[in-house]
Length: 281
Image (tube, rainbow, N blue to C red; front, side, top):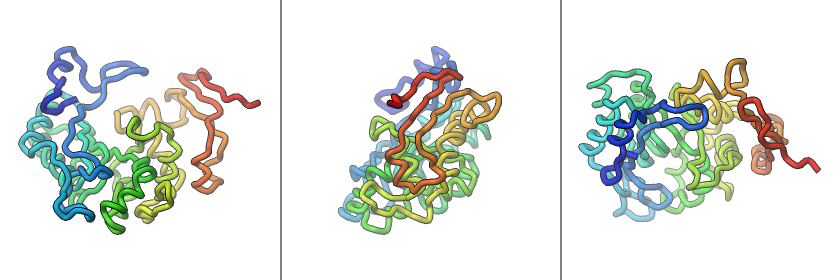
């Protein structure tokens, strides 16, 4: 945690707890700090106001100078960084800080991320590509919060949220996750949202951004591993990688996306050992 009032970065660094330290079961990840709130609550920070309140641009948690300071401190200390940023103004501010950090200390494979990265302006896509910034989005937000996006943004802006297909095609290594405990840890709504691009009430959310089943699984496996520098150890079913496998009762490639939502895990393998087996009675 690297926020202004609750910052343990110095303590963690003094104990040698830098990104990557640990083992297969527990490892130190990136530094996180908050730059804005959430879209569903109307607190994500945007450059244009919310549709349902022309006076509301969201909540800016940090100034540019504060963001620069937090980013530089973590970057200099060798950490990967993963700030929370959902609105386009917050995302731009984080990218400004990354540009300054990389200018001072180049490190082309640090893989700094932007957690959520919900809405960004088109020109920031090029900046993300230039710095190899990873957009770590949550498809589960589309599923659970998509209906609410229509309420606060109108019908047009929800079509531009979390552009996973664009990110993937542009080589940004987007990952997929649930943001548990904000939403359920169940991966099925995530897979459904990436392929169907619909909320739990059926609202469409940028259907041109729909992924194939193979692409959606790729984001949840390989790209998730890439986001933590682990793509050589996990994320694929190939010799030499960790034997962590989940077996489901559903062939995701032969059913409609709606069937994902009722899929059940039959077997879980951890390190080559079966640690869960469903009751087949």
